[in-house]
Length: 255
View (cartoon, rainbow, N blue to C red):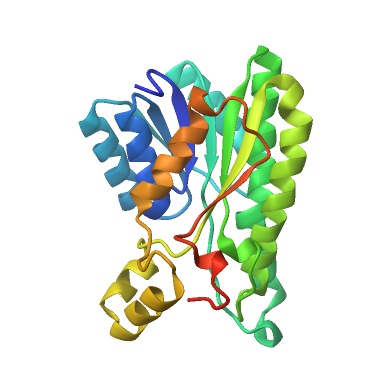
């Protein structure tokens, strides 16, 4: 098992890509900390699925953009599960609003959840590792929106672009402490709202036309890449942005 008896925090693990990552990690021997902010039922369902695999699941309800709350989560994890090896910053919100109609409060919320949270949680976890004199792995979940523009996604794209620079900078600063920081940037993945589009014939036709591999990705495929970055197989990789998009960014158009 690649993560035998390790402990990983996965934010937003109640559904979608986050749940896929949590389950993949559990199958590789890790205990999982589910950090979520809204849907209690989804978080508990993910926990039950992890426990059915035979691993421990700790459910922590917290706003990932609340700075003072995150060191308390780290303390709870270590006190309850005894260690902490990996942080997956997956939580995010997706809002599509025309730029001229976007209220400031929405801009702030998208940047807080999608970008500020990465700085806050990575800092809290890295400070713990530094104090303990040990390293760890941080994997941020970005998006192809970080390098390609779509209408209506000014705040979301700004956050995802910011994640690229934040990943590189933290990788550079945390390398002396044996902390690896990497970014995974998915394209069109068949989870959440995207899953509902599979039955749309027009959307499916566009996918086949504009994604070179001719299909959307699966949450498990993203999870496999994140697993690699969390394992010791990636110990010499840091500051990387690994795109998993079926070739979408190679195409001159977008879905």
